Length: 273
Image (tube, rainbow, N blue to C red; front, top):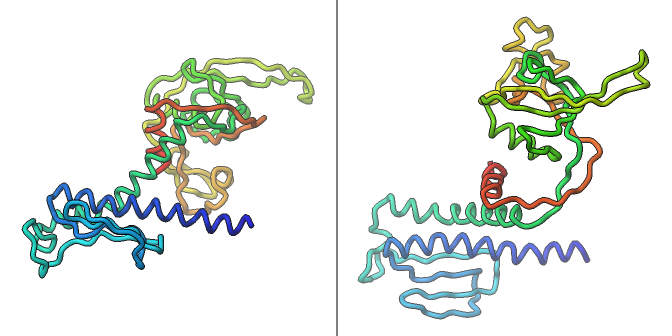
């Protein structure tokens, strides 16, 4: 039954995508004052049709496609014919379908991020510090829990990434919690808070993966590279982030989240790559 529901849900999704796609062609053609003979949703047989102005709006029985019918060179009309329009206009009209699908996806993402929702959060900690990275130079070590960045509380990976990106190439204060061993065997520990100063890189860097490192600015050992990306092999390039750390999350929990409009726009843009 659930499999059938999935197939049934597929139909309205395709329908919405088709409507947006064809509307992109339609609206730009109208803006360019090019006559549109028919704006059709679905494939024949036809279920409904109505002529509005000079365009037939039709709904067809098979909701798995659609089309915008533009006049051919043989069709007599008083308006500008599509076949005689400038090439740049044709390119724009053809491309608007894909653009409108992109726009629809973007708007859906913005709406999702604006709506209150649950996300995974917890204690964001440093799993690995790359050699000669901004993090190592600033005194970060494996196991440090990142609590604040410039007085902004950090309890999700997104918050960490966004705050570091906003402060790239700028002095940044990060509050961390660190466990300090008070006994020889590490059975007794004490948690201490420290404020460290770091200047995140302007952008990520790449280092060549090698067996034996000769230049720590340009190379990284295979062992360390495997911890960043298990698929890397000798000769590959490893990309490091602005801090030069590998982060993870512990004591995970679901927390309430709702982004502002500007944050939703930014995250939607990042999500779509």
